[in-house]
Image 1 (tube, rainbow, N blue to C red):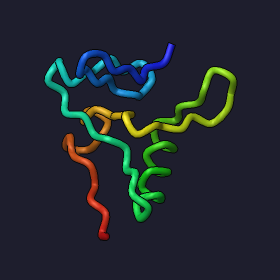
Image 2: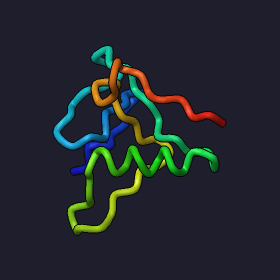
Image 3: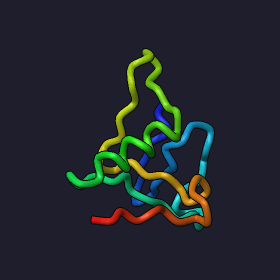
Image 4: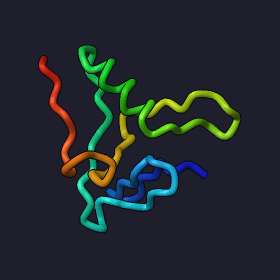
Length: 81
């Protein structure tokens, strides 16, 4: 079963073995999806080290979120663009 769940407004962190949700008071961050943020998005994907059950590379969708626990100081870095 996927860690990327959304039920009735609930967002769950996509990091494997993390069960944090926005309902438990955790800040959630969307994956960078703008054209100029491709490099940052790839860094996030690489950092969480997640793969699909069949061994193929995991790719987040537009609803995928990561909780603040996986960022230094509970904040993402800003791009220069």
